[in-house]
Figure 1 (spheres, helix red, strand yellow):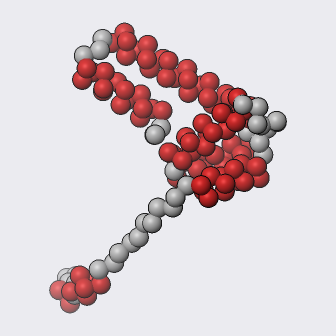
Figure 2 (cartoon, rainbow, N blue to C red):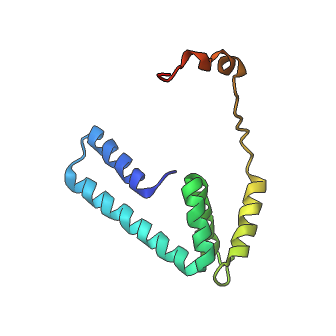
Figure 3 (spheres, helix red, strand yellow):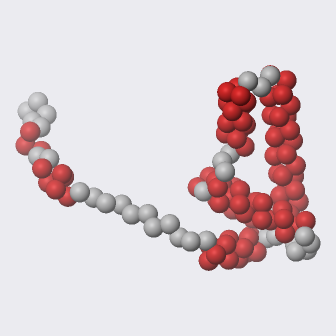
Length: 128
């Protein structure tokens, strides 16, 4: 899942390919905007300033994970598992428990030294 603006653009393109009329597209965009606004207002009621800032930082680096956390926080509140506002420490504990449950992705960086060794600076005389 991505940014709501990207979701709206994707939804609009999908409707264009399916031949939906512009009124339906506008109504769906308004509905998506209203849902996003409602989610933001709920999160602002559930999180203190520091926790909200941490969640926004996470959203920048890992948008899919941030959306999952936002949904989880909202579900927890709806089920009555959250008593008051979550502070930063509570959000960190929640993120740590989530990290333990999720499988880690093994990303690696490979550097081909042979190709770098073939590059010679002697070819460049820089106008000297």
